[in-house]
Each structure stands twice: as structure tokens, then as C-alpha cells.
Image (cartoon, rainbow over all chains, first blue to last red):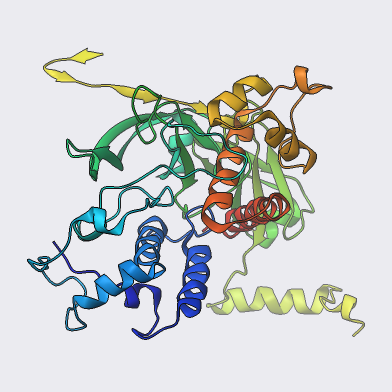
Length: 313
Length: 103
């Protein structure tokens, strides 16, 4: 098993006071709390921080940990010294902050006695913890529905009552019309309950992979649509892509830069169907040949156009 | 569902903001919390059940998610109810902004 450098995890010196440890812990617990942090490794970091705090906040455990000496490196192969006491020497119970099982390193040194966490206002319960996970899908998947395979870390109690993390694969149906940020509750797919109590639920947050040209807001889709100046001024029919296939869009005459043209019902197929908006982006035609330059010169002479009128110049 | 020699089991869930109809009693049971505590969450504006009186309240799946977050914030960070309400509001705001940024 790997050695854990608890001082390094909490970013404190080995001679830090108990107050310094408490402050460092609270700061990092807020930073890495999985409900608050969006970092992909937040849950792992949060668990490490809780484990480090569990040892360093308790002078008895801290003293025992310090006895291992300071020559160990994080991640170094570790075996407890032969004179190491039994876990019961440390008495008391601990709670993993719902972060799942602590490391084998912790379990070997301080393990066994444990008790589920009970928050204020909460009566005693052995229902499994709710868990959360994130799944990233493409915009097209939301148009047709998809099945995604998740790999989850689930705590599981071994025969000795020690808790280990186990990998579990889960194939989950993502329904058609899902919007980014929505959550899917998978009943009883969270952490297992204790005894006969039911398992917790798994909340799956759906995110969309960034798309090269679609943006999603709620159930609506936006696409920037480049048009030539004459298409905007004179009107045109242009083909535009939608996740459902190509459609023809009519650009009305005298359209302005940034105008939004709505394709009703072409957004995400949610219960309230979204729309697709084409945002006009007038492209500047380059003038490379003499003929092209002459056209610009003709416009400069014949058109009464001041693009800076709103600046008062 | 059996296909060829391979067992394929696909888990289907509920999209939580489309899920409705949990009573106060059911919500308390699901999270093993006391009625007064849920009432406090409603008074704080963290939960917004449909229905006029506690006995007729109907909670959404979104409420379950919020209860679950508040329980974790209380337990892990000692956040009180008004603090949790602020955190939930800010998280929602951040989520909206992130989506607008497309990240």
C-alpha cells in the first residue's frame, strides 16, 4: 500500500499547530467539496483532505502518525511497523464525510471503528449515501436519445467490515430531449445501504460537449450564420445545418448584422420544444482582383454610408 | 433484456425537474429527516413545493436533489440553512454562466 503524506495533503508544516491544521482543512474542504468544485478530481481530493484531517486533528492519531517518521515519500510502498498497535487503540469513530472509503493506508493504521455521518436535523439512518456523477454527451445525442456507459466507484463493505472502493459499470439511458445541466435520478444506484436499508440514489448530471458551431441555451440552439453583404441586403435562401439535417432558411431583405432568425421547433426536442436561432454574421468579401476592387470603389463613391454615425463623427 | 449470449441491462432514470409528486412524509422518509427540518427548508426558500399547506405539499425531483446537497453541505462544511440557500443560488448562477460560455 502507498504511504500518504497527510501534512502535504493539507499543505501545512509538520510542526503546524492544531489551529493551523483546522484552518487549512476548512479551507480545502470548501475548495474541493464535490457539490461546489467543478474540478474533475474534486471528489478524490475532498476524500484525501478529509482523511488527512481525520488523522491530524486528533492529537492521539497525529502522534502515532508522526512516529512513522518524516522520511516517507508520498506514494512510497508502505508497511506498518511491527510494534504498531491495533486499530482499537485509537478508539472513537470517524466519518468519511460521505466521500466513500478512506485509503488502505488509513484503514490499516486507524481503521475499523466507524459510524455513518449524521448531519444536524437528521435522525439516525442507514440508507446508503446519494452519489453524483457527470456524463458528457454530444448535442446530436440529445436529439435522438443515447445510452452511455458509466464507470462508477462504489464503496463496498468487505467481510471484515472494511470498506473498499469497487468499480462498477452502468449502462444508462439518456432520454431524447435532455438539456444541459439537467439531472437524472437513478433510483437505488448510489452507495449501498447498511443492513437491510435501501441504497442511495445516483444523480447523473448531463453536460454537453462543446460543438464546433452550435451553442445551447436551455432548449434553444444558436448557430452563427455567415452571410454575404448582398444576401443580407437583398434577401436570400441559404442552406443551414441542424442536428436533424439540412434545412433551407429564408433571409429576408434588409437583414442586419446580429439579427436572429428563428426556426421554430428545431431546437432540443424537450417537452417544451426548443427553437433554433441562426444569428446573422455578415462576412466581408475580400477584394483580390482588379474587378473586385473596382466594385468597392464604386460603392465608396455612390453609397451614402457612414458606419460611424452613432459615434457622432 | 437478452441479446445473443450477452446480458445487456440498461438503467433508466427520471429527469428530476420533470419528476413530481413526493409528499412531505415521503420526502422525510427518503432522507430520514424530520418534518420540521423540511418545513425550515421551505421557509428558507430552498424548496418550493406545489400545494397550499404542508399536508398537501408536492415536492419535485429537483427538491430531492436540493435536500441531498443541503445535507452534504451541513455535514461536511457546517453550513447553516441560510448559508446553504446562498450556496445553491450561486451554484445555479455559475451553472448558467458556464453554459453561456459553452464550457
